[in-house]
Image (cartoon, rainbow, N blue to C red; front, side, top):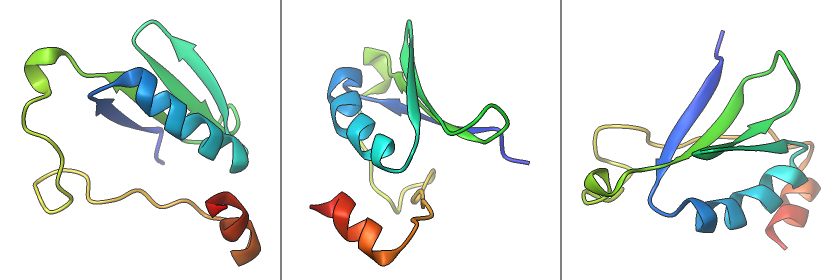
Length: 87
């Protein structure tokens, strides 16, 4: 069973500003900690974690076709819910 998915990010505060409202619309609650944030649905559910990458690991940048994570998909309640989130 999947426990969590962790992403190291270049700018934690900018990432939190983007992801927190989106995750809240999907029903996730945020939990800050010293070096990142967790987005949780329930105690036993897998969660998403964002962590501040140290400066020495920020240079390569992201491209979905490089080795590593290609994408992360979330289940929505309905197409109308997706449209609501996009608005």
